[in-house]
Length: 152
Image (tube, rainbow, N blue to C red):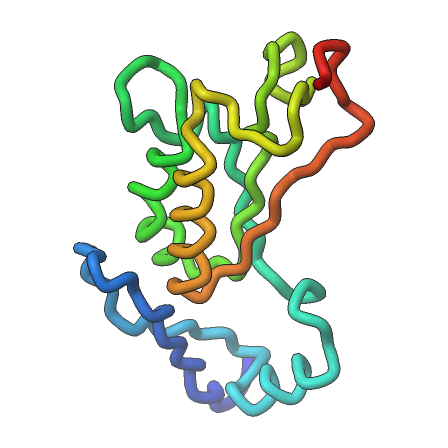
C-alpha cells in the first residue's frame, strides 16, 4: 500500500427531483490509487460513456407499481431515487414498446408506442424528464433486428 494514503475523493449526490423523499448525503469514495485531481485529469479527454456506470433495467421485472405482477415504467420512476443513490451515470432501459411478448418484449410490434401493460407515452416522458433532472443520462434499447411479425 501507499506510505501515505491520498485524500479520499468526495462525490456529491446528483440534484434530487423537487418531489423526492430520499435522504441522500454526500458520500466519500476512497481509492488509494487516485486523487480527485487524477480523476479529473483522466476524464478530461474522454467521452462520458467511456467511463460511465450504466445500470440496465428490464421494465417487466424491475418494479411493479400496479401490483399486477408485471413491472412497469411508473415502477421505475418510483425507484429512481434508489438508482440515483447508486451513483450511476446512465439508465439503460430494455424494450418497453408495444409487443406480443413472444420473445420477452424484444419482438417489437410498434416502435412508436409504449406497451399498455408497461405504461403510456406520458409515463416515459415523465421518466425521461426525471432522469435528466437527476443528472442521469437515459439509454433506450432499440432493437430493430427483433421486429415482431405483428409489426405495424
